[in-house]
Structure formats: C-alpha cells, structure tokens
Length: 374
Image 1 (cartoon, helix red, strand yellow):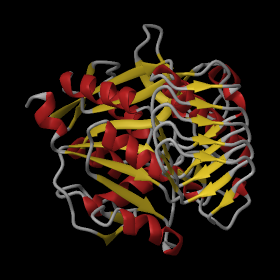
Image 2: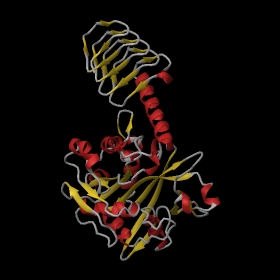
Image 3: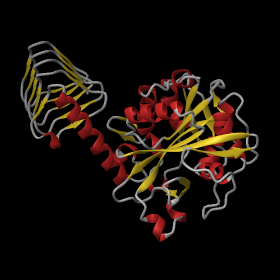
Image 4: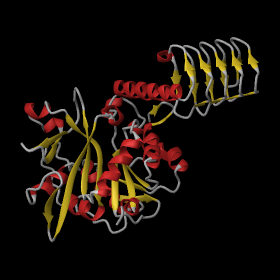
C-alpha cells in the first residue's frame, strides 16, 4: 500500500476526557478558549490541515458542555471513556468507533454518537495541545507510512522538560520505552527528548497491545505509551527493528521534532496563557510575512480566525477577534478592538474604537473612540 493510500484509511483519535482539575474550573479543560476557539477545536483543525479528515473524539461521561462543539462537528464519531483509567483506557474506548478494533477487557468505552469507521491506521493526539503544527504532523505521518511502521511516537526535544514522559533509548540510541515523569528516576528526568502525546499506529497492532496493558505504575492506570515498550520487549527490537507479536511483527520508530512549543500540553492557566501567547505571536509573524505591518506587535492580540490583507497597518494595543477580516491597505490605529467585523479596503479605524459585528465600507473612516455594535 502506498503512503497516500494508507493515509486514506486513517482516523484521528483525540483524547479529551481529562477533568483538568488544575484549571480550577467547572468547564472541561479542553473547552477553555485559546486564541478565540476551544483548545480541542484547534486540534481537530490541525488534523484536518495535516490531511486527516476523519477523527474520533473520546470524552468523559459528562458530555453536556460539549454540545456546541459536537453540533459544529456533527459527523464526527464520539466515544465515552466511562471509568477514565488512563490514556491506554482512553484509546481502548475508541475501539467502539473503529471497525474491527479489538475491544479490551478493562475498558468501559462506548460509542456515544456517529458510526464506526473503517481504518488501517490511527493517529492519536491529546485534546489539550492546541498549538499542534499541521506541517509537522503531516511529515510525521508521511514518514511513518513510507517506512511501513506499525507504531511510531512523535518525540520533541524540550530544553527544560517538566511534566512530560521521557523517551528512553539504549546505548545505541534505539527506542526502548517511555517513562512518565512521575515514574521516572532522577537520571531519566534529565533526558530532554520527550513524548509529545502523538502516536501513529496500525489499528490491528495497537489494539492487540492495548489488551495486554497492565496498570503497573504509581497511578494504577493503563498508559498508552506502554504499548511501545511492550512491542519492543517482545523481541528485544528497537527503533526501526522488528518485534514479534504472535506470528506478526511490529515496526517501532521514533520521529523527533525541535518544535516542542507546538506540542506543549496545557494543564493549568499559566500554561494556557503561555501557549496562547506563542500561538498569537506565530499568527502575527505569519501576517507580517504576508505583507501586513504591525506597530509594537507584542502588544497586539490576533485570534486564529482573523484575516488581514497586505499593505494594512495595525497600530499598538489592538485586538482583532472572532471572524474579523481586514481588507487591503487599511489602517487600524492604536487601542482599537474589532470582533466579527469586515473592514473594507483602504478603510481607517480611529484610535480607541470598539466595533462588534460591523461591515465597514471600502475607503470609509471611523472616527476615534467610536463604539458600535455589541
């Protein structure tokens, strides 16, 4: 099978059942907004931009807060992780949405919405990683399929790692296993190559391995990452090696990216603010590359759904939010706030203006301190 053909039989699995207790909020963690959208919506978009158009969402038992998100993705299968016994259990719960996937004895997963999908491969992502880079995901998937892997982990080189599972290799640099930080020794915690939470796997192989997981860790949970260690241990294989599973064999590989910020997870509000700042900075830099000028860009907030055409000039302390579109050659002066607005070519928005849901004509001038809409 070609890489392109295999990708056509792939489904993404987005793990979004975590309670996020460190957020100190009644709102599920993955629904907290980041740059204008729930963080899990960014993950769905990243998969689509990487060429993976089908995805399954794994949620906890309380689904009411997700109704708006599910309405906007009505065709997406949704599974419920009933007992929430770790990431391995979460992926095992997704078996209900994948035709032919082996159902494990320990999971209480069930299909909540949608229809089971046929897939040879699965790409697993965490729902709390909104800054996922679609280009890195696409390259990771392409390399994995080209190499005909059965299991592959996307690793990231983190300068000052904290909270991430560490990639453990032998003296030859071959992959052995992933150790979660809470279970790692002091020496292992000094390792900077970390698990991003993104795993590519052949469905038949992955769900066989999930069935053999044991909760032998400090949390008493089933860790998804242990599937890679199981595969290697069965025949002593390593990166790019063969590891026997019954009469079959498993090819396990590791892909390392330096873009660790793009795969940063969010566990608390401090991390949310840091990731959002990085995403906004990346958005502004992309707009500047496309011909937009910013005065003091570090003071400006731009959400992901905003479009700004070339030759426009954005002043300091500006907020561009929602589905705002700024036309060609516009001037947005300082301390302006625009939400869900369309600004015609050549228009000028005076300083201190607040506009919500407005269509401003081509060449129009909005006086300073105007407040319209809302």
